[in-house]
Length: 229
Image 1 (cartoon, one colour):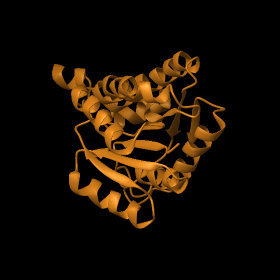
Image 2: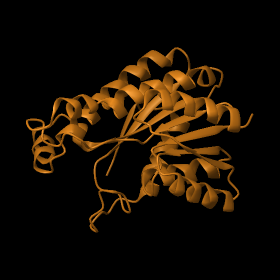
Image 3: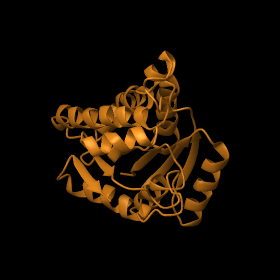
């Protein structure tokens, strides 16, 4: 049976490498983000490598748009085998100064929209023996005084809260979906990735290394969280 991976939050770093890695294994690839031009270019590059790929522009912070996206992917590429959630937002950098709307929005992408995507894809995932939900997370979500100090210094307090909530959600979903034979796991990226938005020219971590960790999690299903970096 043909397999499809949905890459949510597509960009030039980890998500691009994940798309390529799963594409090499014969997966059809759905690329999802707001930038239609970037998606089209990414899909064309994958097609040039012999990978079936398509672009699905969507605002992943909009729960209804997430559900519509999943339905469209299913209609165009077939049943979803892997949902890869790479979307994140960095608002409310200073929690004491952020307004109420920005504070509430912290959890839109890492919790509310991720849950919407999982719920929408679940009918497909439950029918396949190797289904998976794979989540990109970041080290700011770790509970550690030094990490917290860096999040404050970098005005990334909202991102840190969102990552922490996402980490907990991954663990909860991993337990709940285990009985349905749907694997849930995350890669916790502990450093800046080359060519990503966090790369100031000094990043040392290759996106391909992170993508390989994701594929190993998908294949082995041995861990819920894998730290890389």
